[in-house]
Every structure is written in C-alpha cells, then in structure tokens.
Image (cartoon, rainbow, N blue to C red; front, side):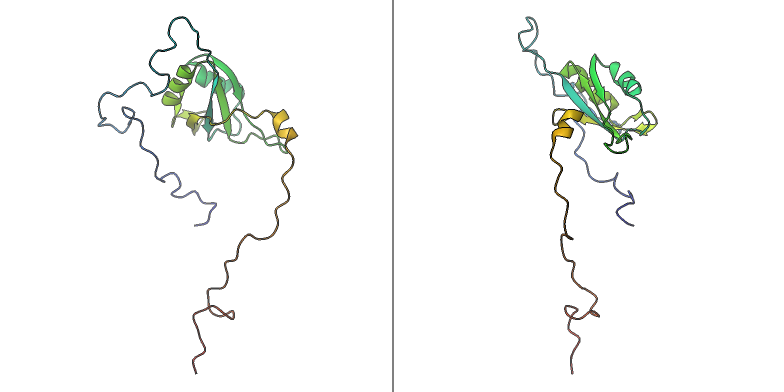
Length: 172
C-alpha cells in the first residue's frame, strides 16, 4: 500500500467528542451546549463587539457552488461570507472552504450539527478556522517560495549487495 492509498487513514485516532456529543449511543448524559459562547456576560446592553467567526469545511466536492454551501449553513444563523479557495493555475476548487458567521454561537451550532455529515454528496469535517481568511490579494503579494533543491535525505543502502553497510559479508 503506497502513500496514495488512503486505506486506514480515516481510522486514525481522534480526540474524543465533547461530552454529550457521542453519536454512537450509550451517551454520558447531560452535556452542555458546545463550550463556546460563554456565560452571558454580553447579554443586554451589547457593549461587547462581536467579531465574525469562520468555520473551515474540509472534504467538499470539487464542483460545489458557494450558494449550495451557504444554503447548508444559513439554517444555523446569519452567514456573512462563503469562500471556496481555487487553485491559482487551474481555477479548480481545492476541496475545502470557509463559512463566516456574524455570531460565534451560530457558528458553534453549525459546527456541532454539520461536522461529519454529508453536504453535496460528501462527508465533510467542520472545524473552527484557526487564522483569518487570506484573500486573493494577500496571496498575490506573497513572495514566491524559493525552488526546492536536492533530495532531502539519504536512505542509504540496506540490502548488502551494494558495497558497504550490509551486515558484513567478507569472512575468510
């Protein structure tokens, strides 16, 4: 099995789901509402400014349209923006996207409800995006990375029939 095969990849260990979220049955009782959004310090008054929050959606179909993705996520709250990155050279979608919500609580609900569900024919993974979205203008300003050189590591013999390092073969 080569690296191109995805066999066993999906079965790799993952962090356990948040309490109260185990969909395999037998649950652990109770469990709160997602752990984000906090305890109401921003209720009433609205003094605290809310920043938009983005979700990263992985394993999207390459032919999905922004409207389809927006429709799937708008059920959970007001969506500010949907972005499907495309390959710079081919223009083809790259298989992941971002959905930005105005309210973090809406994003948390969408993440909870849509993670590991089927969207446009593919099982997607939905997580909170770690960085701000990079816009095409940001990517165009980046300096091209230097060309890669050389091999990056030896590997060295191993079979004993190529002179040196094979476990000694010259007893006489």
